[in-house]
Image: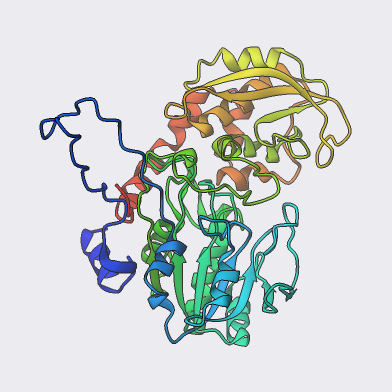
Length: 431
């Protein structure tokens, strides 16, 4: 890996709109009257800069990236402007854009389907545009779909949550591969990583465990945005057939920023991702999908509570005893309305994140797995070893079964994470 690859990507237009450095610090404001230059005086601190998403920057540039092209959009309810208008409605109404098709991911274009489902193919009643179902569709089949839809360019605009097993990034990956096969271009409109992007965390996928919750070897909590991942996919994984890729970065977003500081409205990216707090816990507690315990689906706080029938207060006590930074574990009770343990009173733990900077969701999730197995005799894995797909290998499962602690398990993935972190650095767009 050399910096020359990044330079080639830049020359090819991959970095996209306007040529500005995305995320550059805003210009310094003038000092308050009576204040010496360079001193704070008593002036009020400037308000944080609101993030401008890729779709807003695309509009501000007059849709120049899409001029003369027949466009298909891959999106869901999160593809909105800052005033909550949907990208599809905006593009359809603008004569400068020839929008001809919409493509829906897992949960569907309207976001109505639960995990592992989609809405099928039909027409958008608001615009009359054809809506194609792309859930878990890739390769030549998806390439043929792009060709049949009559598009020249695929535009991707979906809010991600920063975890490898959240499938939207693999919809992006599949679209890039298919677009390369079909001779189409891809434009990625960037959005914030809602849990920040200062670092990557957790195990890196091993290729024998690849699936739709992880196609390629990236870290469980990748710490990247969709546009950054697109650049990485194109540079590292698409081999001799990279796609014609352009990205439209944000302005105003910093790697240390959490979603609450962006000034953007939150639209749940999927039915069980109601708030940014859910996203903060998700990379760790979604591991409980691979166990017999509930990950909180069917409650108002999915992924912030985990548990099962018969679990008691010993679990919260054991989890707090680990001393994991940034989080407390509180005994809780809940009754899921659907999914695992539906209609049954479950005991468990609620995560209370009191320091987002210090909190590592992956280590928290591992700590909960380790302590649940120690204190509850009913602990078990799903029979299909789904945990191995979620973690990216059988290593976490076998180490937990062997009685390993959090630090030993994290140490096992440290070398792979360090290698990924070095590659990741080459594709980061923001300071």
